[in-house]
Length: 126
Image (cartoon, rainbow, N blue to C red):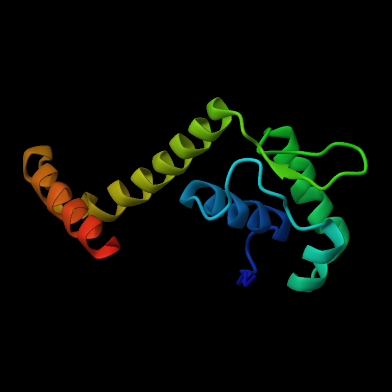
């Protein structure tokens, strides 16, 4: 597990972002076991309290759930997973729109470019 931390964002938020990306991308599946807090802290070389805070926040957001004396697991709630996907998409769209704003491109010009890029991406995935 490799996470590159930046100096401007709190580490617990970066840990959460890392796991959200893994969930959205399907690298972590619903119901899959999360690493223990101690194990993750050791792997990432961060304070266990930081991992605890990230896990607590993810539990509040219902992304993971923990039963007593059991490992934390990724949620299987389709509503929560769909909300996460939509949140991720909205963030990506905001970044994308900001990046292309100086181009002054119309939606009619943009849509075919997006469609072509999506087709190319799907071919590259195969």
